[in-house]
Amino acid sequence: MPAWNADWRARALPELAARDWDLIVVGGGISGAGILREAARRGWRCLLIEQRDFAWGTSSRSSKMVHGGLRYIAKGQFGLTRDSVRERQRLLGEAPGLVDPLSFIMPHYQGGFPGPRVFGTLLSLYDALAGRRNHLFYRLEELRYLAPGLKENRLLGGTRFQDAVTDDARLVMRVLGEARAEGGEALNGLRVVELDRRDGRVCGLVAEDRESGARLTFRSRAVALATGAWADALRHKQGSEHIRPLRGSHLLLPAWRLPVAHAFSFMHGEDKRPVFVFPWEGATVVGTTDLDHRETLDDDAAISREELDYLLAACAQQFPSARITAADVRSTWAGVRPVVSDGEASLKPSDEKREHALWVEPGCVTLAGGKLTTFRLLALEVLAACAPMLQRPLDAAAENVFSPAPDAALPGLTQGQSRRLSGRYGRAVPELARLLRTVGAARVGDTDCLWAELAWAAEGELVLHLDDLLLRRTRVGLLLADGARAELPKIRALCQPRLGWDDARWKREEQDYLALWRRSYSLPAAE
Image (spheres, rainbow, N blue to C red):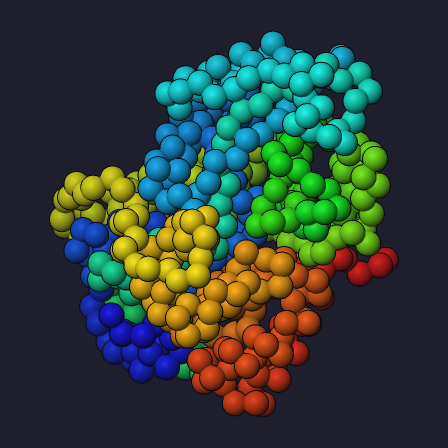
């Protein structure tokens, strides 16, 4: 395959715009990537275009969890939970190192809800849907060893159960890599201006190249909109259902400030919503909130002062001895969930169902809502709706999402590091092995990310801007202090030649990145 970088993009863009496509997917998050992957494996001529960067929206700013969602059982959404836990098990088996098991602990307090018996009954159903038992109750004396520092006043014990965790942006890139290996194409930095409607049917679209300003027309027999919270901007609206953008924000703390070996799930004392404290990428994450996002969707969402206080209160509630304050927060992120709503204004954000919907018009299918965990099933639903537009059946295909990573010697790495790279990079592992021999196996700061990963992203993962590299291809901008400012000289020495940027371009990118980090990934400005 040719190099997948900015030079390739500039050369390929006119030729890709001149082709006749079976399917164009709009949206480069996990839903769009999944649709492209399933279309490509069936031999469809398919292209994905993304307005900003792959995983730029919700799919790089989620809670990182691959799970069924226990609270959906309580809402009677058994089908959603069943599909989710089964897909969770599939991903755990196919992508170790990218999707990994994570144990959760729910502490139980006297007079609190849910109690051990109610929660145990809920988990028995959860386990039955997954086809295996994986929960256990621990008395207080035992729980102290699993949860040092947990609030003990009126604590009865805790229930441990299993779900999974991932790096959501790397999951998107891995799925896109599988799609491209089977003939699909993917472009970032293309904003859809309008759908091309002729005689009552969508037959393509007009897109603007955000890099050059040029406008291009693409022809396609079908268009799939997988744009998440942006879905209402392009589709032909019918009925009362619409997207209700709900924001969920998170804090990232250095692991030493709040060390946890498990994810802790508990009800926030303020509104009885579930909140999580969990280990991720060598750090500790606290999240999430759930409120209407009323700001523009064109900018990176950012945590508010109200949300910061809410999450700090959650830390004080469950881990009082840690005395976590805003000064301990290394970074933040906020994602916007695309929740399908029927427009009932009185419904609280947390009471909205998380079911997805398909909205179909001639030549176009819009996927609205959905969960990260079930992206494969959502993709199949979209293709089933698109197939009649192409006048072809939806051929059966293997159910696996990922092909096994090729065998390649990864010099200087531990078994755990090799497993991590295989899970995250799949077919690109030989390229990582090549760079390890030249760049070495050193880590970036105290993160698990290797300098070779930055080099590979700059060379072959279609990085257009510095935030693509530091916030999505890798996570060093979240994991290191001040957005990895101290490492920027070394990052520049390694990546600037590979990106092909001159000194003026690098300086501009660095300034833009640091301004973005302060605005949307740091603490909110003082009111």
